[in-house]
Image: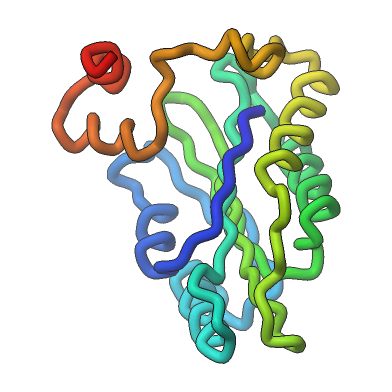
Amino acid sequence: MIIKGNKRGHGKELAHHLMNTRDNEHVELFDLRGFVADDLHGAMQETEAIARGTRAEKPFFSLSLNPPDQENVPPEVFEAALGRIEDRLDLGAQPRALVFHEKEGRRHLHAVYSRIDGEAMTAVRLDYYKRHLNDVAREMYLEQGWEMPKGFKDAHQRDPLSFTLSEWQQAKRTGQDPKTMKESMR
C-alpha cells in the first residue's frame, strides 16, 4: 500500500477535494472521530478555529493510502495501517476524518488528522513522518502478500517517469498524459 502524507492548511479546500464526486465515482465519509461537527466541512472549520489559538500554519496532517490496483482491500486492512501510523506519529488521540474514494474501480482511503492538541494548544510534531509512513507501507505489502513495487525494494529501481502530485495536477489541468509530459521534459 502506497502511503503519502503531508502537513497542510486550507481546510475548506481540503474538504471540497475529499468530498468531490466529479472526479471520483464514489465518495464515502467513513468516519469522523473527535470532532463536535458531524460533517467534514464543519470538522475542518473546527480544527482551523482551534488552530487560531496557536502558531500552527498547517493544522492538518493529510494521508492517502493506496493499495495495489488489482487488490480489493477491506476497511479493516486500512484501519490496521492507520493504527500503526497513529502509534508511530503519536496521532492516536487526535481528531480524524476518514474518506473512501473509488476511482476507475480502485478504492483508496484519505485520512485527515487535526495536528492541534486542544489542551496544550500546540501542534503535534511529526518528526520523520515520511520514514514512518514508508515503514508501515512496506509492512503492509509484506503482511498482505502483495507484490512490492520495484522502487520500494531498491530506491535505484524507481521509475524515472513517475511524477509528483503537482506534476500530475498540472498535466490534468492541461489535458496531457503525465508520463508523456515527464518524458518530454527529460
